[in-house]
Image 1 (cartoon, rainbow, N blue to C red):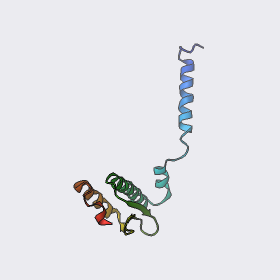
Image 2 (cartoon, rainbow, N blue to C red):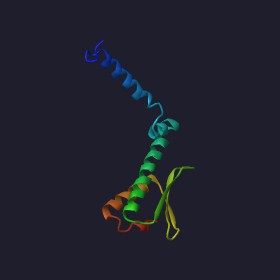
Image 3 (cartoon, one colour):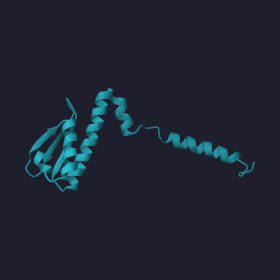
Image 4 (cartoon, rainbow, N blue to C red):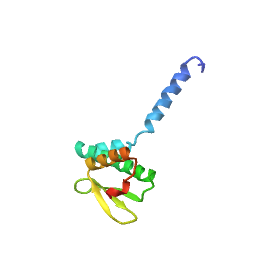
Length: 115
């Protein structure tokens, strides 16, 4: 069988497609989160995780000493802590989204005034 005749090329293409699929046996973090709990709770945790990452980026971008942590027990929420003063505040998802929107509008002028 000639390589250029299409016989071996089709076989190798099928083999490589199988190996690509076999490499993805483990679910991604997002898929694993979606499979673990009820849909509303999973969705809220996913959104809270995105909000925490965005809040961390905003604090880092404006060079502010703020830490953000996702608290999972009870009703999930975000805890923000100022490393300089030690003060802290908790955010719900709606409050976190409002905080991020305000940071976009004000460009970080009063970033640590909320903590």
